[in-house]
Image (tube, rainbow, N blue to C red):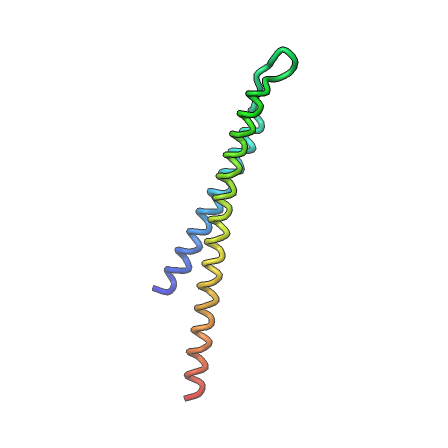
Length: 97
């Protein structure tokens, strides 16, 4: 059962990494296709602010996805550390006997 947990954590980290990358691709695609409404002298200020809000929302989702990925990686490293400490302690106990 110990083998399954690290594999599950690796899959979790991989899934979160994919989600983070997906959000960044969405932003890149949006930036390539964004258009502003024309106004008498340039572009519509209202439309520009609306697009800035959309972009901000997209970056917020990307940051949330990235934070989830980092949290999963930290949890994975913590579990690996605790497992290594437990193995070391178990080895020390056997060596003393």
